[in-house]
Length: 118
Image (cartoon, rainbow, N blue to C red; front, side, top):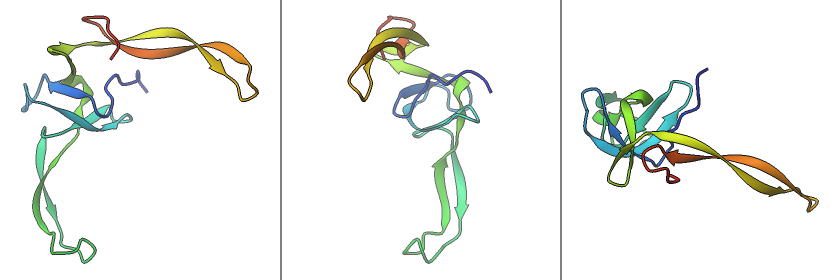
């Protein structure tokens, strides 16, 4: 198992390699185990679906769906352009159920280009 992924669901990303290079879209889902993300409107493939009674009105046929793309082929879009993602550890104060407090660290994503929190 490798490092954690810096791309999350809901992020806007730009494809930097592959047949859809240059396309931008929103991340629909993240598959951590396979290190892949599904991006809206990117890597569309045709799926042949069988008509079923459950799906209501005959929904069989050929449909276009987004297939997963490897996370190394996308880059986070922040502000006016793409950026690499870094992590910063911040000191925070947490509260226990009994009311006492303690110091802990929390990891936050930051832009490597601007240093701003994402």
